[in-house]
Image (tube, rainbow, N blue to C red):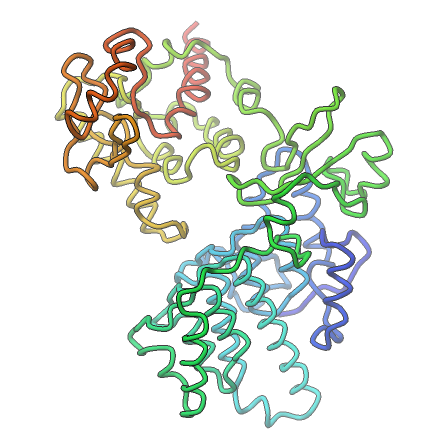
Length: 508
């Protein structure tokens, strides 16, 4: 794979202090990062332009010509820039990707995360032939090994999944199986929660060690870190501080030497800063990345990150007419072609406005794009048999999403966020008793329904009595709320009115 030469087009969105510290390491001798190339400059400009989803830039699959002569990163492999960096040891690129919010657990078509990709690469490079090579080539490979190991450390400290598995190996298996055991990575993996007792088709991690002394050392480390809490995640800005003590604690000024977030490709100091616009950045837990805030004319801070540069309502209404929600509900639970068939241009709007913000679950969005109906509790449908069929069809789509293996969340978390029951509400309804949140189908087999309104649900008579003082004021009355998935609330508030408005406009 050939690398572009360093240019002065733009610099990585990484602090000078962190870069200087990295470049002082012997492993960086004579190495030129893709982060300084014209190819990555184009993506940096794209990322800093308003209205661009970060997923479309930093999670890009398939690399431009010159970076992938062997087809290792062709689009069908579903590998990202982080996978690429973990293969070639591009430490600077990793620093920028992590700061921009790249998903550290993104799986390629074979199920490999960037951490697995890097650990597997380490094992492959640590080969006897390397040490028998002439000094020049040998030193170059050894420096690459150290850079890949450094990248693996960064991913682990960013709370990458340390127990992921590929063909019978976990990151801990790869670390132990290297020709020269990577004790630095073994220690860090155990410290961050790697399971030393995880038995795969290739045995336990300790079985990969050859010498008895190494096995004793491994067991000592297991005893040292066993039962300890995982250390806090380090801040993605790579300041060395924990996230909670850095960008999660307060808004900090946007670095003056970074590319401006207006899309001009100029540095902030020479661009919007000169016009009195002040940018700040802070960690956003919902989006799992550092977002940018802009000081408005009133002095208030408003979010202006590239993945969410507009209020939700304006993202929708900029492209669609808007009508009251009660009119929009006529679109619900009717097999009329769904969002994809009726208004395909709405899909991009949802992807740009709702999913990147974390207010619509990606699994729910996937099903919404592929279903021929829009599920909403209380939307009405002819009978329970049809409701059961719609529920089954929708949940099969959610299963398809999970089977693709791109989402690292636990299965139950995805199901709770996206699956629906026969009444088109949550598949796992919660008991509405005071102080109770038992889940139907898990803590209790079936929740009881209020005989009057047929909407409120309880795990037993005790919970129903506890809720009655508040419930009696809304029971069976107009406006009574029914349990919804959080994504359905977003559909009700923003998507349905816009779709109904478009339908009304088209029918005129």
